[in-house]
Length: 449
Image (cartoon, rainbow, N blue to C red; front, side, top):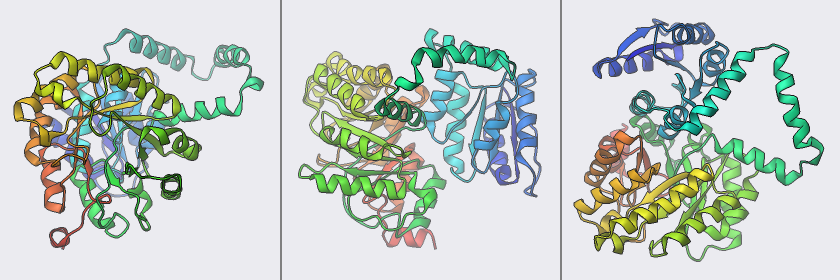
């Protein structure tokens, strides 16, 4: 595939790395500049990349600046370009699968080289095939074709009139805002294990991000002052059975204060959390069938739909381990499908917790294949309630099964130090659930000097 790539000075180093990565996979790379880290203006290079794609000189384009937002705005001004910013694998997959994006923008200040390479792989290998998505892409192209002509207000005005702007309640507006926010997110709950946090060791968190981690898990202990750019990688989580209203409200307050990526709670707290986070970019995540996974598929499906109606944008479901070990794969597939269908209907991200500590390698492969068939977004190792957590071997095995489908893997449980986390990421994990976001021990300090 012929790929046009460009960057400003802030994205120059990442451009060089990604160009080499794509050439190594057999792609033809057209370098549109810049050619050094001397200060330049990103619109110049974003336009070059966009015009290469629009003019047929490249099949797809990649543009890198500090955050990826400005370049996306520039590129989308060029007719024929559908530019999408991506910050993790889910957003890259969504941009291709749902919107047929032909240009990817990345923020070099937000993601590391390993994660960026994985995002590019998803962007280049995912197709937009479903008829409903293709129909909506055609609608995008129609809107783009109107440009700044007078036809655009004529097309939009009847929609507003029909909706009756004056009839929109505060709840209606809140739902609209929530839906828009939902388009920005993806992934993961977890269990709090206690330990040092990102606030106390931000450099270690940045190192994990550079390795490719896209999300951390943080528990209910006071997180300390979290640097703003790290907070968006953290899922603030409370899944304790004795969690009280006061504890949940504290989690909400901390999430609003730090602007974490999400808050993950049990279903009974979803509405309270969603209401408490309204007006912020923080997502709400709910577990389903947690922690045993023994509810029937229809109940898990209904539980997912109820959580989504209450405001959840992410669902972490636990499979029926006993049925899998009994060889009843059809049941387990229906179990997962009931949740993934609910998530697709409600525009939520679906994650499948397979509880690796209870499974053989053959069972891990089988359930990952089932999750892939059911079109889940993630497979995740553990609930934190079983006898063990993630291992690098499990991550490598799970990733080998699902990576080709654009799915992600979360390593959760048993990650006690920097070396453990690095092995998980090297093995294919893009999310890390570890003690109070990341466990910091002497090994981590030594690794960072």
